[in-house]
Length: 143
Image (cartoon, rainbow, N blue to C red):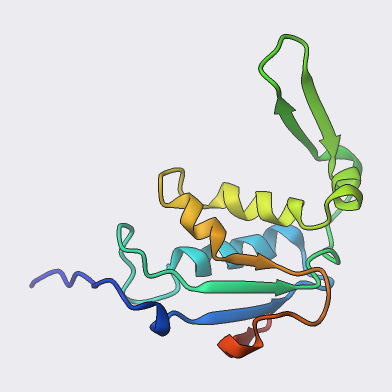
């Protein structure tokens, strides 16, 4: 039996998906988004072929987290100089940059290779109900 290798698709054939994030759990939502971005929900999945779809997330600032993760979950960054390790809690990050927590959690679920940047570019996060991607006719996904 031969292994079927999918071919590169044209940009016109890419699908657009619309997800409403209001009241959704952050990590369950990001696993669903990462699955769609990686194209693992398709039968013709191949890790080396760029056939990924676009995902538009509306109300991305109204996500929910469980337990006390708003105070306990910390994000770290380092400037490279000694003693310059900076940390910010999830609650402060959601106030400062409302979409950054969802963007980071989806990005960390994608493969760590040179295809990750292109997958991240196909994720569109919008903090309001109306979005500018109506001409692409996105399919609505309910979780």
